[in-house]
Length: 210
Ligand SMILES: C[S@@+](CC[C@H](N)C(=O)[O-])C[C@H]1O[C@@H](n2cnc3c(N)ncnc32)[C@H](O)[C@@H]1O
Image (cartoon, rainbow, N blue to C red; front, side):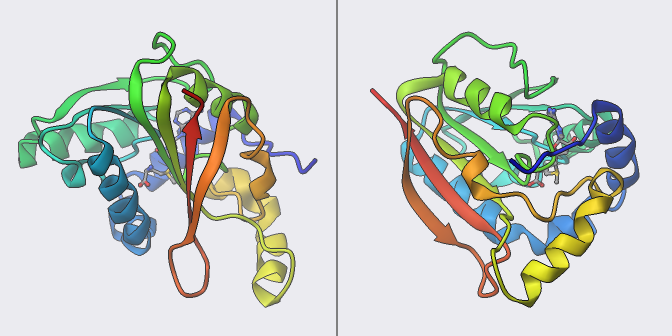
């Protein structure tokens, strides 16, 4: 199994560097996934948990009738999300909390939709995070993932392997294999959709057994 070595202290320092420039850099090239995932969440309605909410770039796209809770490990990223909520008067956002996705401080089965965008390849223990997201999702609810997943072949696969050693510094893991998010107990993959023509980002929808 390919190991993701991202350490908690690396998350804090990496996203302290990212926070001031995130919306204008990585945030800008990843809008397709945010628009699509929030549309799917809006169709389901109810209470949404966004894990790794970052600077809150997706928050304005959730429907005003939803209730949205966001968590993130980085206070620097959360500060920017709080500013957006205030400036854009996003009253559907119920709360934002500093929290480690590996140990979600919520009861079992309390969210209709759990969303994680560009998160699963940067957390120290993706399997534990998937298990936690499944735990807090209601039976019959859904887990939405947007992420870059490693390719097996081609010139982009070569770049992914070259970038891999810089994962901690970049806060981004370039060769993360998709099979690490599949096979979670009670979760079934029901939709897989490439989000860009180059296939840089992929949307996955999983349903939790009712
Ligand atoms: C690439 S950013 C994505 C932010 C947002 N989801 C988006 O699409 O713009 C990854 C986010 O995951 C957060 N993160 C990393 N590890 C985490 C953990 N263990 N628990 C919670 N959040 C974490 C980072 O602080 C960062 O805000």
